[in-house]
Length: 118
Image (cartoon, rainbow, N blue to C red; front, side, top):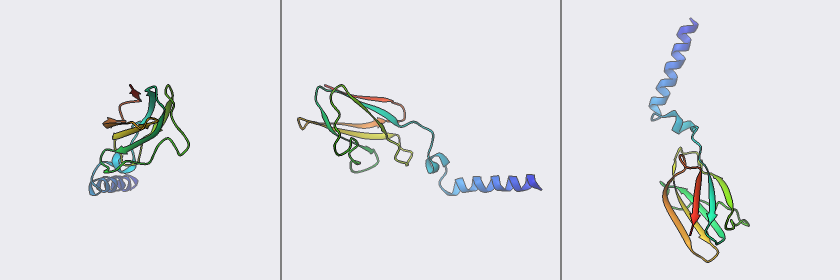
């Protein structure tokens, strides 16, 4: 009887996956690492850093914090896991001279460092 009950529970779990659109990894998170070191090697101070899931139409929140900057030669570590399962992000960095550098389509699931250089 226990084997039949266990099999029934297993079937219910499988049918739940199918009715929710499939991949439980997308629905419940996955184990991919989205932590990336942002390295500033530009010779300028980075005053703002924005990142957003590439599927979004606007930039996400500023990542350095309201009173934090990233001096040249320094690194900050950011976890880009927004809970959607996305790996492709767009980056925008703003520097003390007003210059902005944008990079689209960064795969944060496969890189561990992103370097801003001159």
